[in-house]
Each structure stands twice: as structure tokens, then as C-alpha cells.
Length: 511
Ligand code: ADP
Image 1 (cartoon, rainbow, N blue to C red):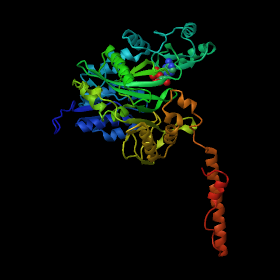
Image 2 (cartoon, rainbow, N blue to C red; image 1 turned 90 degrees about the vertical axis):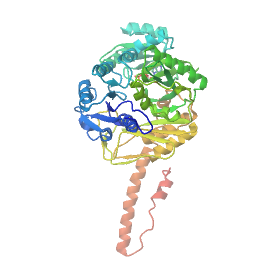
Image 3 (tube, rainbow, N blue to C red; image 1 turned 180 degrees about the horizontal axis):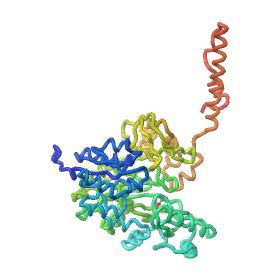
């Protein structure tokens, strides 16, 4: 079928093998293109937004991902039953699983993503490093292969010089990663990293990298088609991290100029070519204080933070490009020649409590007010009345803002966050606003250590005093009430106003 403007939709029906905001994000583009959508869901996700949004939806099992969202057989069975032609895996779950890519292909369907061979080449960090070294891409200095013993780790660390980073070859999500500052800590850290990697990935292999001091994490969005074109869409600055996981991302990076962007972009395209890449991918780099950049890893899927790239690239729709490229269409080779226009920032909204060690806070959303207005974009997987399940990642939405410059984008995102109201469970919204307003973030001179260094300043101010104010207000209220009742009983005039405000000010609590 072609739309009224002659546009040929790339597929007639797509199954989205994911949940939450990313499933909705993908389906939104499908709906715009006239592509029908199929959702899959686990039991606790029965009433999820992605299920409601899809044209049709099918249950695939109980809460545990291993019994539902990771079940290749069940997902393929739904694809067959629903007549979907292609599968979009989103991020996480099966998105970087070569077995899944192969199974989709073998079932005669199209995976909206790279071939299994690219996933394999980039999936294991040590293999990716070897590939990149061979392709002339600068990598973070360290070992090429996994380390067998603690003694070997000691020798390699001496060679690299402390501090070093122990990392899981099969790594992801910061698991199995340990910074080690001196030889005395190494043995225990090596064993701990090994155990964690084994538990998380079923693969305990560890390798070692030099720990770059005060690095920035900057990544390049690339795109490759099946006609030999590889382009990039500029960088994203992702150095605002908690426990090595991104929290706020922005583009352009405060330290990347046009020349550096072109240089990093070219290297990223080179990395993609080296693994015969197809579709959307992200090449991550660590950048040192001298603006030297080193390959960190490549994510062979759509990235969480892709919306900010869309916002500064004239609203290009990366999911639409994914669908078109998967259907065999060529990219316009001019895609990457444009410069970023304006500035965009994303904040990841979590159902978690920053004041309680960022503990997840699943529960029912009783009320939801969504932000709007100029330059604001909300990608969310929630609605009022929905129960955020405990079983999955607690990220419930992403709020992005774009402005003509960085200052406006920050002010806009802060304003949008002030409009967002989620009641019924605790979120990190107030904490995110404090991060955005922190002088270090505002200055643009920050590195991956920023959140850790500012940890205490970022906690809610005066929680004790606030508690005290609440207690005080309660006490005064009941005191007032007693007085009023007494006056009434005596037929006298009740006091006109409570004195709690004055009391608060006197005690310096009215900030
Ligand atoms: P994962 O795949 O587990 O998320 P990455 O390799 O992408 O791990 O690294 C995540 C983050 O950890 C980086 O953005 C950076 O903050 C930190 N990191 C990783 N390797 C190093 C290193 N060699 N030196 C300093 N920081 C590092």
C-alpha cells in the first residue's frame, strides 16, 4: 500500500519484541508509516501501554524475562500466527543476541537490526577490541585477550600502570567491572569481577584496560545500508553516569567541535564497515583530557538516548530509517552532511528513590501529568492507573528538550521536569533537576566522575528540616484547632491565622 504522498511502506506488519517506552516508540513510527504492529507481553505487562498501543497483542509467558521476552521460540510463534514480516527488537532483551538474529532469518522473517555476524563481532568486548585494532581504530589501552589468572592480571596491571579497569569480556550494564587502584586490591577485585561476570553472563572471562582518568563518554550514531553506504549523525555526550550507567545525555557534546566530530564520525564509520554492519548502531568512545578518543564498544542496536540525535538532526526518524534499511532501501548519502541544529538533552526518568540508595519503587501510578510546550519530547511507557511491575528495568520514561543553544535546552528540560508529575510512587525527577542545575553540569566541564563526586550535594536538601517542618505544622495545626474550638466554645473570635509560617521563618526553615 502507498500513502497518499506515494510513500511505499517498508513492511505491512511488524512485531515489536520488547516492552515499555521503546516498544511504544517503535510503534509510533510504524503507525505514522501505515505499518501494522504486533505486541508481545508477559503476564504482569497485560495492561501495559505498549499492549494498548499495538494493533494486536499476544501473551508470551510469566514475569521472568527468561520465560517471556527472552523466549525466541514464543516470539517467533507469535510472528507466524500474526503474519508479521519483520521483528524490531528494541534495546536490551534479544536485541544483540546473534542466536535470535539467526532464528529470525531462518524463519523467513526480517530482523530490523544488523546480521548475526556483526553482533558476534562486536558482542564480546575482547573480540571487538581485536577487530578494531586490526581496522586501525584506536582502542583503550589494555589486554587484547581475556586474562586467565590473578597473577597474569597483576603482571598486566603493572604493564599498563594503575589505576586499571577489570572488565567482563561478555560485559554490559556495568556488570563485572571493577576499578583497581593498586596491586594490593587486584587479586580480590579479579575474583569478584569474575564471579559477577559468571553470574550475570554465564561467562566469567575478564580482561584489563587502563583506567582513563577523568574521561568523557562520547558516542557516535552511525547508520549503514545494504548498498555500501555508512553515515553518521554526530555525537552524544553521555558522561553523566551513576555506577557507569547513563542518566543524562546531551548533543552536541560541550567539547566536540566540527573537526573532532568529523574525525570521530569517520572512525565510527570505519568501525561499522569492519564488521559489515547494517542498520542503526552506536560506537562508544572514551575521551581523555587531551581530547584523544578511544574505542570502548559498539552497541549493535537502537540506543536509549537516540531521541536527542533525532531532535538536532532536523527531526530525522531513526526508527523509520531502520525499517527502510531493513527492507533493503538505500540511505540518502547526504544523511550525515548536516550539522547539528540547536542543542538537545535527555533525562532518564526512573521509578526509584534517590534518597533510599536509588532503590526501585514499583507500584501503581495514581496520577500522571505530562509536560508539554515548546521543544519538549516525552517517550514514555506509562499511564495513570498502571502498575509499574517490579520485574523489569525501572526506567519508565525519557524526557527530552531541545533549544537553540545549550543554556535554553537546560532551562527547558528543567521546566519540563517541573511539569512532570507522577504520583503513587517515588521517582528520580527532583534529583534530575538538581543534577541539571548543578554548577558542574551547567559549566559543561564534567566527566564520568561528576555524579559520584557530587553525590551528597545532589541528595534532597534538608530532609530532616522538612520533616521537622511537617511535624511542626501538624503540631501548630492541632494547637490552632484546639484554640479555635475553645474560642468558639467561649463565644470569642477565633485567631485569624495560624502562626506556623512565622514559626518556620524564625527557625530558619522556610527555605
Ligand atoms: P558496559 O557495556 O558494561 O556498560 P562500557 O564498556 O560501556 O561498559 O563502560 C561503561 C562506562 O564505564 C563508561 O562510560 C565509563 O564511564 C566507564 N569505563 C569503562 N571503561 C573505562 C576505562 N577503561 N577507564 C575509565 N572508565 C571506564
